[in-house]
Every structure is written in C-alpha cells, then in structure tokens.
Image (cartoon, rainbow, N blue to C red; front, side, top):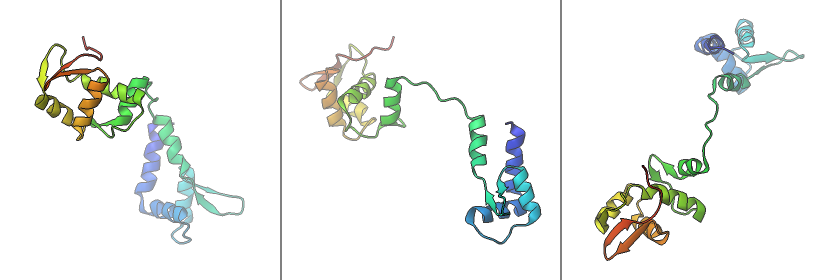
Length: 164
C-alpha cells in the first residue's frame, strides 16, 4: 500500500456524496446511497456488495492502511516499560504498585539527587513533589529502600544508579 491509496480513501471521505453513502452504510440507513457513490466506495475498498446485492461498509480498510504505514513497535526494556506505565508527563500515576516495579520507579526518582550532596528535608520535598503529591510517602519509600539516607532533617543519596 502506498500514499496514493491513503489519498484515495481520504478523497472519498472528502466528497459529500461518497461520505454520505459511507455514513449511511455504517449506520445502516437505506437512504442516501447513490449507485455511483457506492461504486466509488467499493473501488476504494470502503464498501462491498454481497451476492444478494446488499451493501455494507468495510471500515477494516482503515486498519489495513494504518498497519501498512505503522512504524514497528519499539523494543523496550523492562525498566522502560514500567516507567512508561507509571510515569505520565514526568509524574507518577500511583504509588501503589508491586515492590519490584516500585523499585524501578524509585531508582529513577532517586536520580534527581546528586550523589555526595546533602539536602535539607524541605528541598527533598520540593524535588519529590514534582513526581507525586504524596511526597512524604515517596520520601519514606526512598529511605526504606536505601536509596536515600537520613540524619536529622538532612538527606543524601545513598543508592541507586549513577549517571556518568
């Protein structure tokens, strides 16, 4: 399939007579089905006539066109799949997840803290609020999993991956 076929299908849907005929087929309405419009739809793969002469829409044509032009799916690592699942526009959708998945997310979040730098609790809260409104729970998870350490109200990164 090529771009010409896509243009042809879109052109059929742009014309009032063929658009009306296609819509009537989809909705099951008997009116507005000129023989010429039905012939054009059939030529474009958007309609078919069975042995009894009954016309039907063939919306699967859109699926065919999409598949023929779709990019192959990206190969994602397990970490990337988890991050795409639980992070939307850089924010966590939930904190309630299995521990193995939560660890992947927490390791990702821990990267906002630079190794060797001490952060007051207020700065940690501001950084974590960017990820989730329940920043206190997020901070607690990071400490419990050994990704952040705490002494008094001062935190520092003590685990997780380091970007080089």
